[in-house]
Image 1 (cartoon, rainbow, N blue to C red):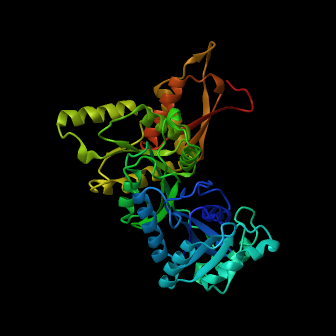
Image 2: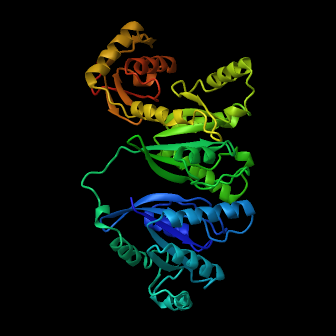
Image 3: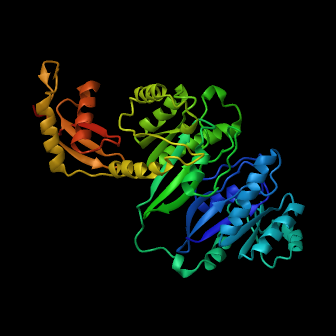
Length: 441
């Protein structure tokens, strides 16, 4: 798919424009310069043309030298990879020396480029962009990313530059698997994402909290489309102080919401922490598919007894997610990383599985015969029939005479029996109990 990359200095409104075009708050926005450090991508449709839009770090990020160099590398990578560039400048700050430098990078790329001057709230303010013609640009688009002024005209012309073969197909392809990589800060989420993609798509630093936004990276492997979502590390609430970090955590939790499968990343050296379990609880509450990944396995003590005890501890502490496969690997050297995507694909297949009503009811009948429901207030709990109502996760509605009186232990028994009967050993299952319209005993 054709790629359009938004580039510009820090704090000129690139992420706000990205959100405006995407039609939702996908990129993290704050007045503090340098908030966006990685590329963030989303699919956009305008005038029946489809393209991929990428937000990038600001050119000239000040502060940590390593992060500045990493951000510059990402900008250069985005320029090289993009088919079309969208250059954004700031009308309120005016023409800046770094605008000149970035324009030189753009010209050397020889890529089609659209130039937008942001923070112009109406036609009467267009005079503020006159100085930008010093850059030797023929057409400049006055826009307000915050309020939408001029964005439609910009997108219409940009869409005209997108080839006809990028138009919307008649049927949407819905085969994409969305996988969120989540975990505490500095457990190797960005390193793992880069390893899976085979290229440095996000910045990696030993400084905890380098990743602040949730970064989407679509790609394809073995005929399967994936969307990998790298997220900010989720700290304990007591340790979250900065406003921007609090927003980052909200974005990480939103990424869980829009994912199909979550890869919960742990540090093998540190073992399982309470925060790891807390993060896993978010996944459980949202009934998302789940794989527990133990990273930095190469740094582990190789004593067989120690390894056996650690694996036993992990399974015991994650017993509330009995369906979640556990994988060990090293994102740094790539050992056993090739096991991850096949496992994710298997979890998704079960997460998306549908079972016919006849099979569901036969399984319910056998389950009840094997272990009769308990008596409730002197009356036997009865199940009449069941059906699968939805997938992602597989959700089964069971009709009975006392839906409000089912003990959690019997619900757990039903869940385990359904999981075995329908071969859903790697997927969460949701059971919904309902009474019948007529009271039948």
